[in-house]
Image (cartoon, rainbow, N blue to C red):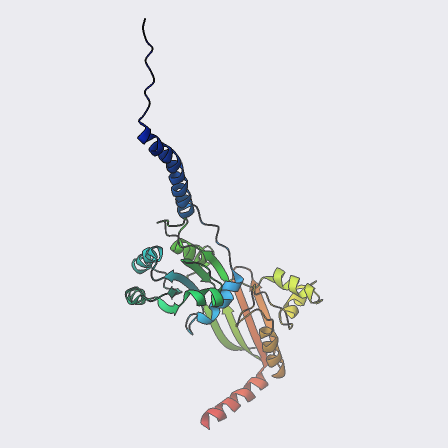
Length: 305
């Protein structure tokens, strides 16, 4: 009579080890998987942050009134250190002023960034939160010449990623001029001449031009006429009308052009405007030739005195 073979059973001392391993392995996989997802998942799409841009405006230097890139980095963070290496070794666009908000103290990092042409602004984690409303770093923010945030997000497409995207973001923002066949730097032309018995001061740029639809919408909100082109030109100089997207220390309050027109009117002059969206704007300040002659004589006497 044959006996069926019995199923082999592990020693009693091995059973708890298998139980622990069975519980520990899934837990380990879960933790590692969550960590990898958190570090390599795509970053949220960058979005303009108006409050952040306003808090950064006072950090711009006197010669930093064009495009400005702000890099928020931690001195003792490995992620930030990789970005420092990238920033110091990559070819940076010369038309963009770049500022590094460096949290913590690291003389070597600060020296390397300064040597590469970055302006360093030392700060603390507390100041970062309370003054700039920034909860974490690294962070990359780009503001346009008007001080409006045009990009706010990461330096890379993925957390902990090696695919640095800051230069691509800057190139895309600056490409607005390239796509229109314009150079990277704007052109401003000033001319004076006499025409039809008037002394004319003409200022011309090759920028984005006036957004007349934005002027129309703002004028309508204020109850101003908007039916004709002349109505829109008049509205452009009305108090409270502005096409700026955000209020800053240099634009957005709707008082600049109103003050300019008032000053021209007091001198007996008038202002003519020609502007085409995407091509540029021409402002002509037209004064009676007699007024221009009197003003010129007064200036000559002031210089002589």
